[in-house]
Image (cartoon, rainbow, N blue to C red; front, top):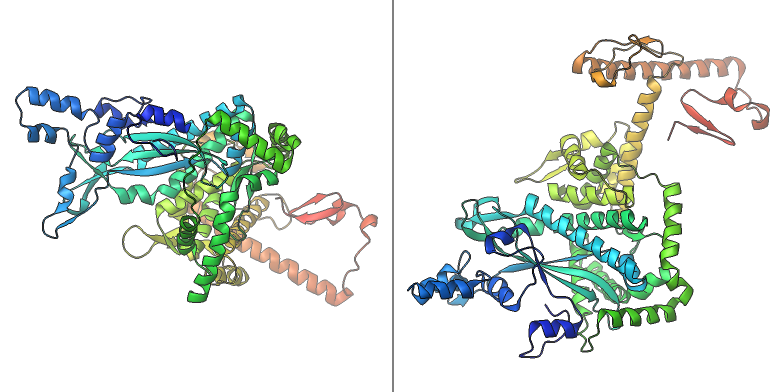
Length: 585
């Protein structure tokens, strides 16, 4: 509640927050109405002590006084202010062991590193815009957790579960600095979620912590995606992936931010990476192979704990911090780089939009998502696919807005077409029969990627995803070429199409009479006919080439300048000056 500062005994909370240079906490969440609070209200010290420290109503003092005035006993008056099970129930008389009650969970929301740099070094107007983008992304992510993730549990072992009646009760505290030895900018929010929530019948109970924690990565990727979209919409900046650790997932950064500024801001990361390399070497010596994703995360947490510096005693306001950060950055990279940061970001955004077409393809995204998650995990759950689908949208759109629900559509496409259930529970794995092509050469490339440990895990995942995406593009290209007038064309029954998509040309399109709707059977016959026709055409062409070479010898290759491009272009190729490429990208 007071940032990373030390609070002297007896110091009021407001004075301690002013001294630490952090704003007061505010309440968020739709569950506030049941407690008589409103979103945006300041979190007082007594409210936090009661709700987050004792599991009681934040206005318990007033309620207790009123009940005592009505003649209720002190025990009954206190019990009336308790939300759910009292913390005294954590004392077990059988084992004489007292368990620490779990009354809240801390969710940390922070933007990509380059956003902290821009927030710290640009003018006040840009700083306020970035803070607003952080607010919007955080609040929308909390709303998604309320609507789609949060569950209330009751009965023995939490067997009964349902959606929360109202929503979550969250206290949000904003911090400005990282824990680096030298103060560095790190705009982030601590969202302290109360474990208490209302069941469908109106009684109070505890949230299902496992469902919340299982969706932490999906919430993180959603927050990043929403923050990117807000920044692009308000400031016009674009985003690009940057590889931080070779073989690991890239992070999305604001295009145009000087790499030297990233190094200036990421001193804490460098400390962790130095310690992590030592821990990774010890792990490989002990186990004989590099750590996987889960083990790597555990090692990273261990490295962060080992290098965690103590809290600083010198506390400064945000204005003083920004002045110090700007002076430090100028000493590190020069004044021109610092003062032209926003200008270079706008110029880099124009270059990104000139070469990148931000389009999200549901089928390609589903294939990419399944391939990456399968290679990384083997068996996975739906929330793993959801997190990866949101990462895919971040890479594909570069900050352009996505259609609401598009991430869920990608996941549903992946689950329906490319996965199969495995084991108990809701786990699934990739359906290799649907993903892998029938070509044995492609299988020889893809299958070892799931087992070989010579390459980094994410690198293998990307290779598999790119190979499968190339297969989808090739299939689409072949389908498009199959409907073009060309030699050896075959008549096929028309597939069923919605009436609003049928052309109005007196029943004709490109000289062909459209067939009436024929349903799923016609689509299957079309596919079989196309495959058989393609096989016959390939065999005919191969036989003709062999017969011609046997009779006349190999055909001499003409000089490129002597033959016009249109005479050498084969059916199904796209010709550009100076080169010939097969197919339309």
